[in-house]
Image 1: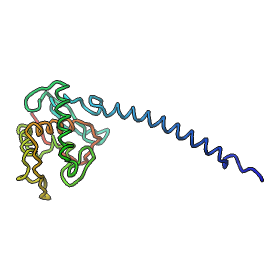
Image 2 (image 1 turned 90 degrees about the horizontal axis):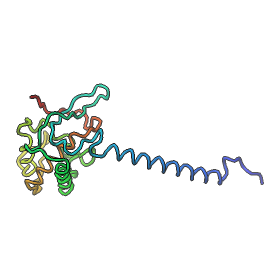
Image 3 (image 1 turned 90 degrees about the vertical axis):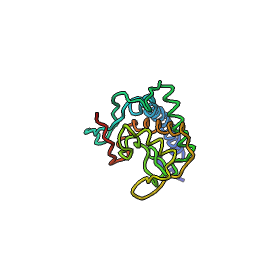
Image 4 (image 1 turned 60 degrees about the vertical axis):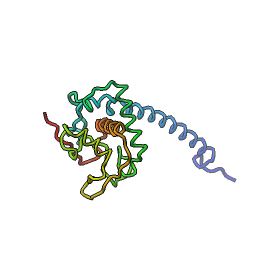
Length: 197
């Protein structure tokens, strides 16, 4: 019986599989740590939680061909400037409220969820809320009792979810913080509200 070519031997493919698996594992570990540094709050593309103390707007980046967030002048949420730990706690409470009320059953948040209701990723700067002077209170009122308000031209309505005033304010903080995340232009074709003056 003649031996086959070296590249057809079982031993060669076993060793190759072990090497490929080992190298893939190392690459995966490196990419995981790199990704964590990229998506941590306070990094280049994900603003620190205290960004809720500033105006958030968008401008078109000609190099990247997408809308990118621009952090502007001080504009504290609900007129009260928060420290980084207090801002983080408020944003975390808003995120937990979104999860507890299962908002992604209908909405999309950073690309996750459903497309039945509006995408919430940049809802803080959505022209739907009118002007920046009334936006915060309109958002709180809507989150607490959306039953008499239309969501969009499709006529879909959001159910009343029993959100408290404190939870609604936290959700608004989460939405403001999330709007400061550089999402590479997602969602596309989004037109932010005008925030001049």
